[in-house]
Each structure stands twice: as C-alpha cells, then as structure tokens.
Length: 343
Image (tube, rainbow, N blue to C red; front, side, top):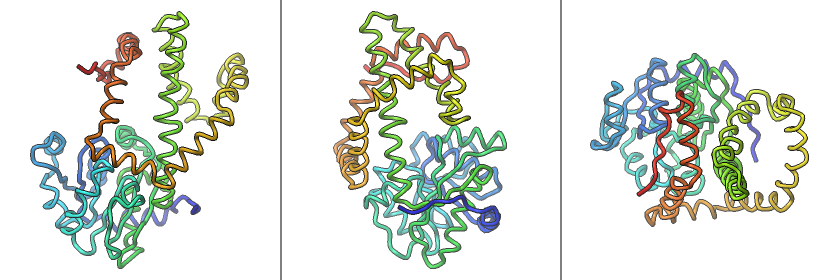
C-alpha cells in the first residue's frame, strides 16, 4: 500500500492559480455534484452542468443559475470533467464522454470504484484524477458556506502528457470545493476505493445499521417500549459519534459517565470478538479481490433487485415508525424526515 500525506500549502496555492481560468463540466447534479458545482462557482471558477434534458437534477441546476447542456455538449470545451454519477453506470456513460473531450482535458471522479475495478477503461494518454471529500455533499456545502471545509483525498491515476499540470488541476479542484481550508491528502485510486468500501461496509453503513436494528429488536422483543429502545439504540448514536469526531475515542470515553465507560469496556470485546474480526477480514478480502464489485455490478445489471428489496425492507421496518414518532418531538428535524412506507 502507498503512503499518503497532506499536500503542502504552496502546491494548493499553485493549483488554485492553475485552475482559475479553466472551464469545468460537472456531469450529474445530485448530492455531491451540486455541492461541488456550487462551491467551485462561488470560488470564482467557470462551471457548466451536463445531464439529461428531462432530469429533475438538471432542472435544479438551471434553477440554481447554471448553464446546462446535454452531457456530450457540456464536456466538449471543458478542461476538467467531474463525473458525479453512480459508480455502476460509469462503464456505460463515460466512454462517449471520453471520446468527446479535448485531448488535454482531465477526467475526474469522486470515487475510484469504476476505474480501480476495471468497469471503465481509459486510454493511457488521458489524464485521470480523483477528489473524494470525506463527507456527504450536504456537509461539504455547509462547511463551505461557513467559511470552512472538509478534508478530501486526491489521487492521480494517469498523468496524461503533463503529470504536473494534471495534479495541479486536481489540487485546484479540491481547493475550489473548500478542502484547501481543511486538508488535501494525496493517496491512490486503490487505497481510496478499498478503504472507503471497507469503512462503509463494516462500520458506517453496514455494521452500524445492523447493530442498531438488532439492538432495537432485542429490547422490543424483551418487552421494553419501542420509543425507549429507539432513543437508546439509534437516536443517541449521533451524540456519541459527534464526541468521537470532535475528540477521538479516548476523548469520548472521558466525556461519558463511568457507568457507560465501564459498560463499554465490559461488553465491547464480547461483541467484537475474534470471530467478528475474522468476518471483517473476509469483507476486506472480498473488496480487494473484486468479489464485492462483481456482486454489485451484477445486481445493478439485473435491475438492482437486492438494492430495491433492502430499501423497501428498511423503509417498512417497525423502528422507522418509532423514529418518526421521536422526530416529531424535535421540530428542528421535521424538514429532514422523508421516510415513508413503501406500498
């Protein structure tokens, strides 16, 4: 594995200067694409949006004041093309874009999945980069508006005819979305992809949600009130996560009660025992050898039956009704509550 490090300020300043007069095309205007486009424009850069004429996201981009085009038109004059589309569609959508791009134009991704796992083949002369903010688009945008930023990972997969220029444009992109205010960390497509997938699957999105649901179900099955079970096992997760984010695990431990801390010491190793660690290593092996990527692409090619079934099951789980009941008591959360039962 390669060693990562924080990019120095003089390189960030140089990248900001290099990209200042360049044209950027953002393809896709979802959570991340919108945040990137808005932040880059408000940094003073020239940004256009590419997408399907009938799409809701393109209509949103137009409402936000961007010039919008069909994707092939959008990339034709761009110096940097930022692909902000789901990983599983890159193999179909990107080849026509690459053919239409100028020879010296750089193509950029927010995640290395499609390139690293061979879903997308890029000519060796084409410059390919990655800028991956370590947070959702909403956080990227909020921090930018606050005059701050969130860290981004940056990688150059192929430097093209001028590797220094290629990296400079990528650094300018990362700076333009606000990451220059926080930190830009140089890495590789491989390391970004595999660590990102592992973190999502074992902790952030897979392990955490399964742990929450299991704890909720165990308490409810034992006769405890659902609202109490939800509050203890789901709602309070953010408070602990915020403490960890702000202070680290040791700092969080020092901020909770002695009862909570001793309980963590007593129960944590019983839950995350050697058998769990072994299964986590199995997950990592599936990521590293491409097994997970093949399963995901296979599901997407079949119309995403596993994804759709899981979304329906999650939406219809009894704890979602309990969650809505709790959130109704917290007026500041009401605007974010989009969960409804599937029919």
